[in-house]
Image 1 (cartoon, rainbow, N blue to C red):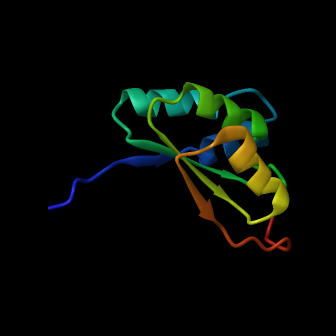
Image 2 (cartoon, rainbow, N blue to C red):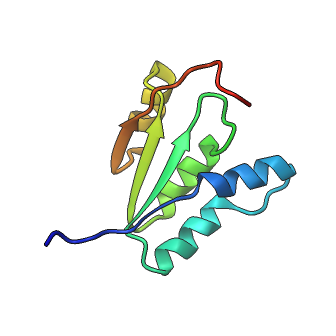
Image 3 (cartoon, helix red, strand yellow):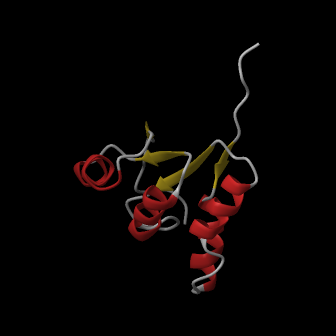
Length: 103
């Protein structure tokens, strides 16, 4: 049987922070807690509108995580530049993005 790994997506923590207009809850701190609790990877979705995860979150996560960082993103020049030049995630997942999504 293949090894089962636990990945934790922290987007909703960032959504709460942004909806409150505060610095908490901090998705970076949540990722640290998940990692300390045994998570094998952290997943974030950096959107073009930065509605959830921010560039700051991505950069700090890349610098501080000991485990994998999976980056979900739209396939645009800006997102590719962030992924390749700035944060070098463990895995990149292309996400179809439609600008007319519900807000």
